[in-house]
Length: 84
Image (cartoon, rainbow, N blue to C red):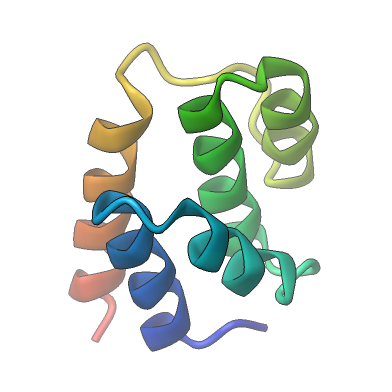
């Protein structure tokens, strides 16, 4: 399972434009549903909807949220920060 700090770092990297580093972090935590949610948003961010749907299913989510990937990443970051 990924640490909360790793997941927040991945989101921060994605939001700052370092998609590749963010992707490597979440990919290294393949079995974590929280990482899968972030992974899905990263693929939505790059426009790869098929791959995003794969990761949503891995996270137990049937359909992507209606909001933009960046909005979802901020929301996920806030949720992680509240889990302190």
